[in-house]
Image (tube, rainbow, N blue to C red; front, side, top):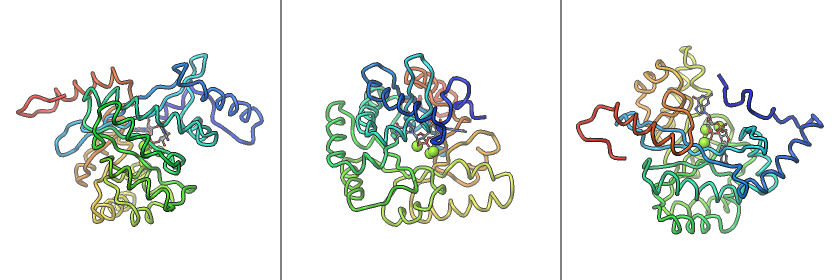
Length: 284
Ligand code: C2E
Ligand code: MG
Ligand code: MG
Ligand code: MG
């Protein structure tokens, strides 16, 4: 199933393995030259709106290649980029690339970009995003920032101020991987997320009544608080029909489409629009 972490990828990081710490130093060095050497790129995974049937958003995901062409999975390089601070420049580059590749060309109405707490804590982050919007001519309302519910991040007043500055630019704030940490519930009290992304681990349990009931409870909780709901990791027909039954707003997963570079993403979205039966021609 996890093809992404398969053969062409660097092995998983193990801090107790001396070879891994060499590897992590190599990756730290690579990250410094990655933008200049074209070693980083963005791929886009479609998000389908279940009431219209259309692809109405895409999540942007970062990819990194080593000099020999091997890919390094984000689960390995993102934590290193956060630790070294490289995430600041990479993050800015990511937003600019997403604006240019998919938003300025109107490939999709909204693109979401994952942001690290390190970025939210950095003074001037919102201003740097405002500058990217100005440069690329993209309206803030077309961007969403995904914040992952993680253990490490405490929601302090600097982060809350940053989020409110981003909202003032029109940027939507989404809560990612909801249900995987301890923080999510308290964040729901503090932040008015536009959309909550339910972690894909909840879908795995959906073949049992107990698992299904659990997912239903989470959905009611999120919905009753007025957030839109996106379920991640939809892989099968039966999962998709369950999502229709639960009246989920948006779905994302291999069943909808895999992450692809902008050019191929464009073709996939056009093909998918053709298969949606609507009276009006699809606007792209
Ligand atoms: P995420 O934000 O939760 O992204 C979803 C991950 O699930 C992606 O993995 C995606 O390829 C994978 N996925 C999507 N649909 C399915 C499915 O149906 N089944 C399965 N098994 N997997 C699916 P990816 O691209 O390896 O990214 C992993 C994580 O790395 C992301 O999780 C995100 O937390 C982080 N990440 C990726 N790009 C960026 C970035 O530009 N900046 C930051 N800060 N973090 C990033
Ligand atoms: Mg995400
Ligand atoms: Mg996620
Ligand atoms: Mg995740």
